[in-house]
Length: 200
Image 1 (cartoon, rainbow, N blue to C red):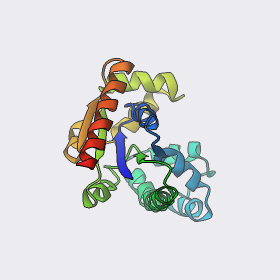
Image 2: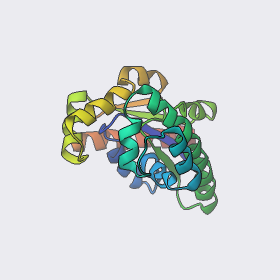
Image 3: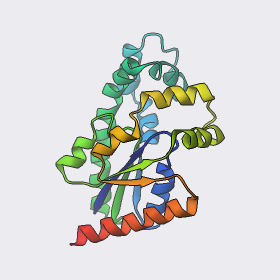
Image 4: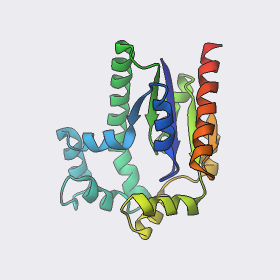
């Protein structure tokens, strides 16, 4: 089973890329969705309340207001959630590998690099794909779909590493700055490259 990481900033096109992988019967582990599920576990919810005393309730919305204030609060949250997410990834990889139903396992997560999780990919020589897109385009996409204010979107983007810095850690880079069809075509080509490289 091929294991691949897909990362990129807010509204860069990670989900679109993951959907292209689904055409190859890939299993998609969505980091954001899994983190939200883990938030409701007793261990994580208690750790969040202990770390952020002014947190009024354990919901993704209320947590976001506290976590995305600055680098320090975001780092504190990463130290809580990312070890739990990484543990879940390893469990899921074993489960999916044992079931032998999916030839590719994709980890779709915005902060693979910022959280330090990219070290797993380096250690086990797993391909890490970075999706890049101009900030202005990403803001436009996020406004159309994320139900977030412009200020909130810009604040969150400021807390993410710039693409140029993330490029140092990526094995493959796809620019998503033209049409949807062109982007999907580029992802298709890359999937074929990864499959062929794995066979050789």
